[in-house]
Image (cartoon, rainbow, N blue to C red; front, side, top):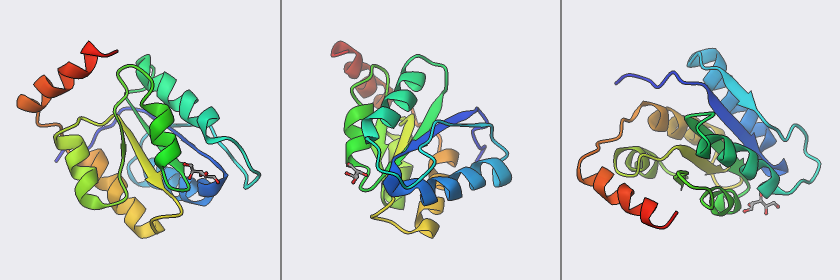
Length: 150
Ligand code: RB5
């Protein structure tokens, strides 16, 4: 499978700074991707919507094709990101969801819960999500219905 090589935008809150650094290292050092990191950069408490909004807006407006968001559970980041038009943020804390989020949902933002999964699983999820293509066809027809809402 061909790996997506477009630049990627990533953000997290204080609950997932360590995992973000691991994910970023894979993206840059192993996958050779350009990464825009909007933070946060320390364990000081922050509000996850501030990071979800930056990443989701960039993907919504087409500045970046894909994004990654990580918080404690991934739930808050998903909720915030999916308020933006054309954003399909998928909370994937398992491999099956990661693959299907690409094949069926053409997810353009991967969300993970840094307090839910371990670093090794997170990297496997990331790899699967980057490498799995969208199947199109009937799945595109279903996604088109999203645009009837926003
Ligand atoms: C932060 O404590 C936590 O609420 C956040 O990381 C996330 O899990 C929210 O959905």
